[in-house]
Length: 544
Image 1 (cartoon, rainbow, N blue to C red):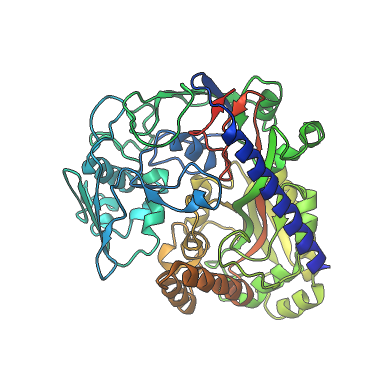
Image 2 (tube, rainbow, N blue to C red):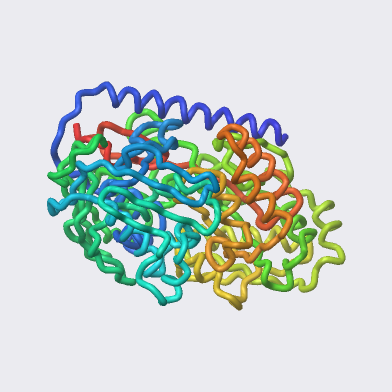
């Protein structure tokens, strides 16, 4: 049955990718009209957290800021797989890396300018890096290993001494090798910013930017206005005159209703909302035909175990018991639905190069016999506290988990928290010492596409208190993750990560993967130049 399920999922996924690619290819051959304002709609409470590149922490903000960003290296405005191969942007070429892997030297191009007309030099990136350390930024996970970063985090210095900028030369020195650093530079945390841009913990609301567009005005809960940077001379495609973002939609469904009737051109909401039967989008548009697209996504939905608390600390048997007790397909069917996600028992997406399907836990039924065997003698407490977001789908998921885990003797108390489960604030809360949760629902959305962002950042002990919000800390797996990150050669490294992913899920089980959300996109009938990677590439869009 598992094989049939996997083959079905792969067939659907392959069809989605093929048709979406054909549609994107069709769009690319259409004549492109420049001009016009592209209209976006977000839900008032969960659509956008910040427009400050140091603080924006999940997909809607990243999508908006990507239009404003000039990176050292960037992911091209192209379809997969080219969409995830970094190329130089402001940097003239890939950096020179020292033999010990700790020092990166970038030479910058001289033609980039901010929207106020000033030129971009190396100090624009020096300031971007230091701002991630000066405010409570999710980007600090990418810069904390720079020499002197801890002094900035501790309030002892305004600058990390490991970052130096002279003219168009930028040098970054790390305390240890950081094998995924070039991928990190593609994130919005590394956007060039004016050297005098304040480090406001509340975030800046309008600022000069060096990408194709810049933020003119931001009023939280109301609107964001972006307009074309007339000084931009880079190579990124940019066709519209700007973006008007409506932040006042009252329900998660409302942004999609606006797009459906042509009052907005695009919206971003959680995957499952697109398949709400009251919206009827599939029946009205079909999938991957003209306006409604679905692509494989990179967002992992999981049950994380708190290794700092008695129930799951040093208790891999119970963590594995929970994995065996879950009926992942029933959870998918009861929440997001089969079109919205694909069940998984591993931490890397199946589209990640090197992924291997190890068939560790059942996907469409529990193995209660094995789960009870593992739980027997390993239940320090039958009472466990599960944190979830205080919104309908996450609460529904938590109730399904409660029912399923009761069958192995666990009494789950569901605690609903008024935070989005993909936001930085959610993970900061979970990472706070003493926070009384045992299981937590998480939506993990890495800021860049590399296996390091799934395995090392989630489970390496050096990230405890940050991205490792579960406090999982195994000396053996710490060594394995760090060694795998340094494997030479892209193909060999990818395959090593694929093997590590399977071992980690099978033997240590620091979390129970549930599924990977697909990435739906609904656009109005006037949108052209559609590039899905897998979120709509706003910079590349045009209006028909």
